[in-house]
Image (tube, rainbow, N blue to C red; front, top):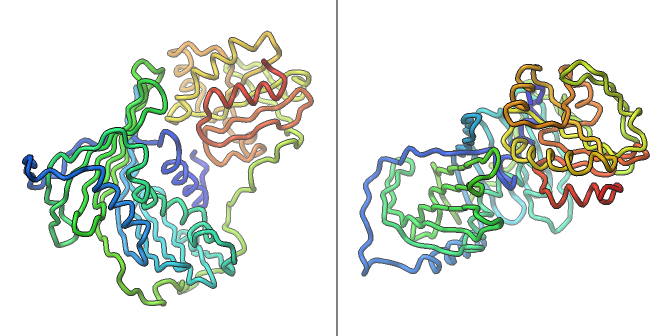
Length: 411
């Protein structure tokens, strides 16, 4: 969303890397490298190779990884992409260094096991805190941003999970820094979580070290799905060193000149609204200029959907929201979209898809501020007494939405 602060941009990274359907799409330019097809005698057992890779990542004592994430999305609305560079250093247990930069901004995280720091260069501000004594992994104890960055490696620890089919396609020479590494290219089909869904993974694996040097994660919604998306995240490694001694100084933050220590970063938003709290009253206009005031809807269950036409996960939810609007309006449900785009953009999008639930225009983002919207889509359910019954950031399944409405008295 266009109001995001440097702190909030990395919430977007969280959503991109962890959402059920990442904000991503097709990146189809092949790497120009030498390849050769495997002969029958050369063919290895793909699932056994994946198992060895998983064991390798779980057993790492230290590592230095540098990689680029290209996250792309393709839908009827067009194509969007974001490129992010990540450097991950770790000495297990307890020592971690994460450097994130790219189109979303820049962030640095350090921990030496006893203290941790988070630095935002754009603000020239950093936070510092004592490392907690819990048994959680270091990245989870330090920062949610560090935890998300390390999820790139966690997928390799679980690389053989949910693989319905795995096959070795070929060998391919992959440039890593100044070297070329001969990799086994392994294609994996994951088990469908929904009928007709397609989920493919392709890995470039360095067999002597059992390390992944490139990965492509592809997801396609079932054919015929409304506003169907194709998503792709390409992870390309520039450096991959493991189990080498790393200096303690690498995990200590040295503030640059003028950097200021702060309790929290400027522009940070408060946490999500507490379930059971009073829903903040507001008044907004719909696309026809009519006024809608929340407190006038007491006695009804209200579903607020904060969305935008450019948001891939939002587009996935829209047909579901329309169904709920049509099915439950007579039973006391009032559905409202909330959008900060210009009226013509909103109207054209809704009209083209024949969505009938009303959308309210929050051009000044005042209601978004009231409801502490940190990203979209965000779904808010308000019960008949005007209390927050549910608050969810990110893509919501239809089964969850129906359960929330049932709990609020709509079924």
